[in-house]
Length: 319
Image 1 (cartoon, rainbow, N blue to C red):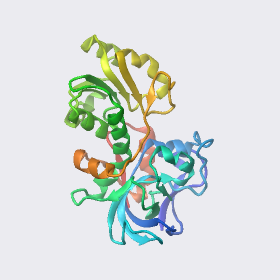
Image 2 (cartoon, rainbow, N blue to C red; image 1 turned 90 degrees about the horizontal axis):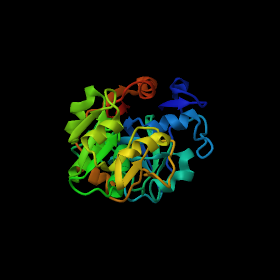
Image 3 (cartoon, rainbow, N blue to C red; image 1 turned 60 degrees about the horizontal axis):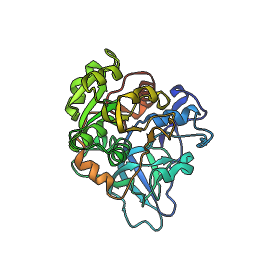
Image 4 (tube, rainbow, N blue to C red; image 1 turned 90 degrees about the vertical axis):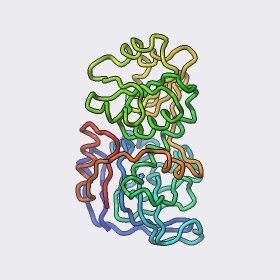
């Protein structure tokens, strides 16, 4: 099969399209013919080697976790899915097995979704039947973003009408977090580039702060002198959040998903997580947001764009 492969740590330029063997499912696993796979910043962190202490890669390494596709083969003991089933979801690259319990129990480990075929653990809650109203590209864009935004929403203590500042509202997780928080009736204030203001408002933000034009902290406090009920950080490096946290009123929250993780005594880091039924729920609740698409033959460029250009929403590779 054709797959995007890295044979050493590095930047996206160490990736190349190669022919490698098709992975076969073992007991409790399914083989999936991938139709679409979404990119995530975590793919680049793993590739860079910054996480090699906790999640060392085994080379050759196929990146990718989000996917949509069709079940082709089921391993012994699988009853949840059958060949021909349309599925979508999230599988952790196998090097992250030690961290898998953070995401779901039981976890689904994958051979890497930037390939024509991948193998997943069938009973994981982070994999689900793909609803008929979602095409593969739309479905592949949901799992990581949605399964990160949903735990943020569950951790959020803001009441309806409370102002909530979302840093990085136009990014991949923002396309899920902003609609979910807006649906919960919070007053979402999103930060974005000026050219993304309409996009973020369409997601459900009540206000948008152009972080390139004004200081986000000063502008937030000018608009909301009493502070906001919560700051939700989707983009700023976690170790830079102390200054931004000044916008939060006494008793409020600072929720973070960004790396590196900040001081847990001050700021709560929320991890991607899946419960049974979460993906089906997200598929009905999230708006269909256009994704920037690349064929598998241009997957290296897709990762280069993720690393080096401004990204609105999700980047998706079609296979």
